[in-house]
Image 1: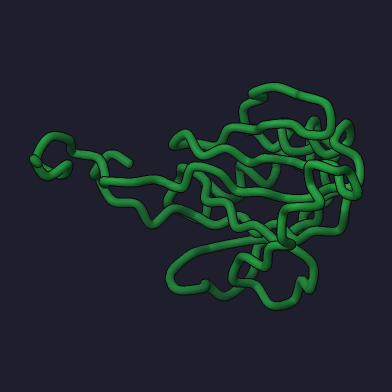
Image 2: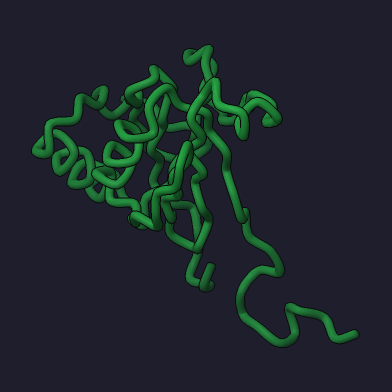
Length: 148
């Protein structure tokens, strides 16, 4: 068996799916699409949003049969949000890139927090909440020149 890295400049694997349970799929789906994520489709009780790199955010309606089998997740790095949370990384590396992205969200009617004065492991970042109160933190990228 050949090594994957020898055949492709991309990493050998990517995060395929990130599952979140939401109160109303019909509210959360346009919210996440408005962040600049790609709409991939809606289905009874769930919707799919595509992130850069091909990862899919699966939004499942809480308290429906298909989501009852899913465990509640506790992901992300920012401890100030006690509910489920997700960390998203923009394509830009500089604080100015994050400032432009944040300004675009404000222009669309979102209410993100200010960009933090300090960095977290070299990342500039800001946070906000989705319609369910789940925390979302947006970071500048740490990806180098290699394709991801």
